[in-house]
Length: 74
Image 1 (tube, rainbow, N blue to C red):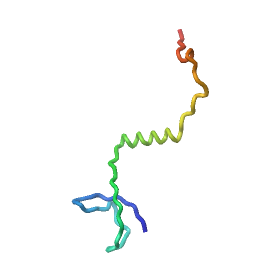
Image 2: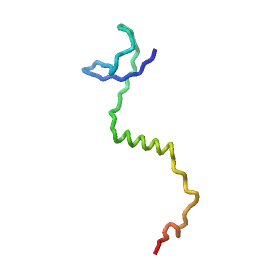
Image 3: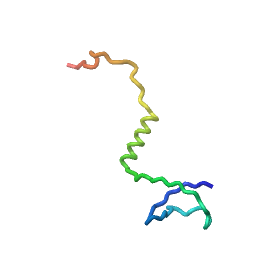
Image 4: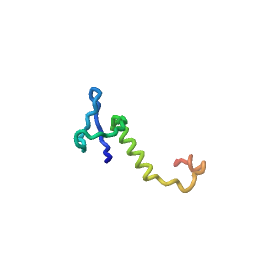
């Protein structure tokens, strides 16, 4: 059985954030990786970048000439 869950280190001891689905005295193998603190601004930025990648704006069909780029309404 494989279960992924989060835990908090308190005084060198792992405290699971939820109850473990194993009976007492069950031996388990642990792989530990740190969880980065969530920065709301960074999370929002990453969501925006993902949306931009999923829904790109199409390229312009043609290129503008120099005169078109610098034309002014007098």
